[in-house]
Image (cartoon, rainbow, N blue to C red; front, side, top):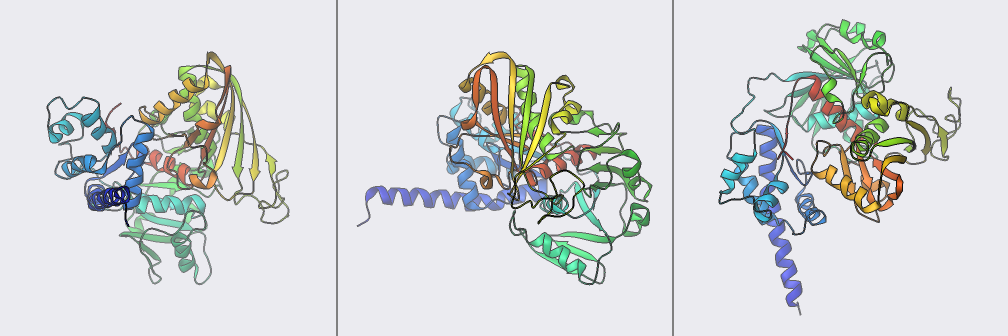
Length: 482
């Protein structure tokens, strides 16, 4: 016989599922038609399943005293669909919670409250032309960037993936490239439909019409022949890292700017979005998105330095193996990296600690770093051993970082977990630059040890896309303002 508690639970679950299923198409329409990215306490709901929407609402109880039920947030999403909005990232969870539980309603209706809180109401950007994007190279980062850009395809798209450039291949190359986009051993299947047009060398994916261009060098390409103009070329080949090499792209017809998905040499700006993206000027032609590790650690280091000050420290990176290593023992120009990546932990060097100074000059000369490549295909960790200028304790430091992850200008870069069971595979697909593992935090007065997870592929790619928007002069606010 079914108990009262069981019936109550089943009724509650069915209610949540119904609201999530009804909310799902509205979230999609807001994104496709208006460029509005809905989230709940930082958890993105675009392209999320009904179960993901329920889980995002459940996570609110980790940060607040009361739960946020889907029936409570649903009217806010519904109201947004009826408003004239410019593109923005809107945390409907925070808005609903503030309205319902923090005494900010002040007698206003939901619609009136949203009009007061959202600065993008009534500000359309229909006059802004989409920026053409070319991915030069189609490896691990290139394919993830393609996924991220394709999921943004729609009437409100402001970054438009127009082409992919790869080296000339053999017969069947286009089908294999499409297959690699469709299936990924780490990140799972592509969310959507992919077809190819071999006659025109085109990949069609979820409404995106992507020209595949075969070329040996940038000088071989005239992008205007494909209707591509004023393009932002994202070089993810790793072949060039200086102005001379990357400047070759600017010699191709149809190219306006170049973004490197690796640390750059010389005077090229190394950008960690959220920390120093304001350094990008309209006249900058070549910019670097730094490395995945630099992106993971710099936002957390900035937060710590802003509050407590950093005297000095050491960053040890525990990094998943990459294509730069060998599958089995073989020759490699770098020490140790020739040994089998899936079988060995490999001590190697990293420039990430020194590279932090390019984004945070106040930390120049204060950090050392090293790295260990480990036999996992994705998700890495940075262990930061820091000597602080001010004394603190574990709870105070964790509370500060938790607040940074929720209510600061770094909320899209820094995530926070209080789980004592989380492991690396749980972070696959994280859209944050880094995730603070609060349960591992160690503090002894002015000495702190922090553990920061990061999806070195997907999380980094999300940071790259943010830099792309900045280079294109497209500014998407995160609301509500802290």
